[in-house]
Image (cartoon, rainbow, N blue to C red; front, side):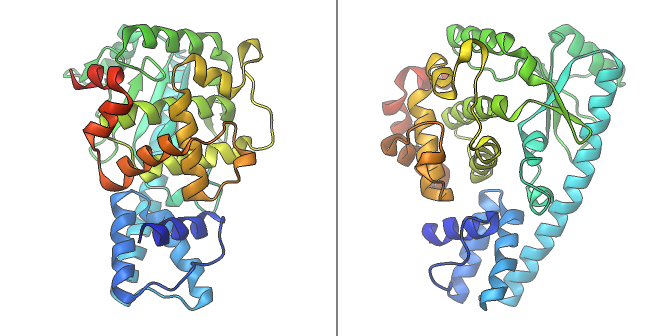
Amino acid sequence: MDKLFYELMQVAIGQLNCLSRGPEPEEWLVLYQKAMKQHVVGICYRGVEKLFEFGLRAPQEVSLDWMAGAEDIRSANVLTDKRAAVLQQKLTERKIYNTLLLGQGVAHYYGAELKDLRQPSGIDVYVDCGHQKAVKFVQQTGRQDIRQNHHQVWIDAWEDTPASLLTQVVHTKSLWKNEVTQRWFRQNREQLYREERGFVLPTSSMHVVVVLLSLYEQTLYGHVDMRQLMDCFFILKKVQGRPVTFKGEQSVEGVVKSLGISRFARGVMWVMQEVFAVDAAQLPLKPLEKEGRLLLQQVMDGRRVWPLVKCYPIQMMWNLL
C-alpha cells in the first residue's frame, strides 16, 4: 500500500502518468486515510482526478469525501495567503525586515495547478529585528497575553490559522550548533529577501537549506510528515539545473556539511529518489539509502525513538531533555 501511495503522489505532481495497478475498492479508503495522516490529501486528490482518464475511480463515498476535503483546503489557502500578505505589509510599514518561510512561503513553488491544494500549515515569518521588537509588534496588535520562547513569538490573531514571528530562521537546541547556524544565515542574509507575487520570500537556493535544516530538527522531534518532504521536492525542482552557491562560493553540499547535517541531507535525497521519483543526477547531494530508510520509517510508521537515538545519539540527548 505504501508503494501505491507513493505512486498516487507521483501522479499528482506529474512524475508518473498512472498507477502500476488499479486499487481495490477497500484500498482507495486506505490511500485516502494515508493522505489525511500525511497532510497531502489535497495534492493526492489531484492525482485521483488524473486517474479518472485511465478509468481508475475511487468508490463514490470516498471520492466525495476526498473532493470535499480538497475544496476546504482551497478555501483555507486563499484565506491564509491574504492573512500572510497583510502581516508582511504591517511588518514592512514598521520598517521590520521580514520574509515568509516554509508553509505558505513554500506553497508558491507548487505551481498554479497545485498551489491551492497544499494543506496550509500556518504562517511563519522571520523578522530581522530582535526578540523584544517582535514582542512589541505583537503587543501593538492589541494582544497582551503573548506566547513566546527565546526564538519565536506567536501572534494568535486567528483561531483557525497559526501564525508566529521567528527571530531565528531555524533554531537548534544545541547552543554551539545554533550559533554556527545563525552565523551562516547572517553571512547569507541577502538571500532571505526576494519579492515575488506580493510576498517577500527567501531565494529558492536559500529555501533548500532552510527546508533541510527544518526537516532535520522536526525529525528529531518526531513531527515530520509527507507534506514537508513534498515541500522539499518542489524546492529542489525549482533550483534544478541552476548552480546554487552561497557566500564564499559554498555549494549546498558544502553548506550542509558545515552545518552538521550532511548524512541526514543525503538521506532526504534518497527519499526524493524513492518516493518522488527524482533522478539522482538532478539532486544536489548523493543519496544515502540507510539514512533515507530511517527517515521514511519515521514518516510512515510514526516516530520511533530508539532508531533515532542509535543514529543521532548526541542530538537526541538534547531533544529528550
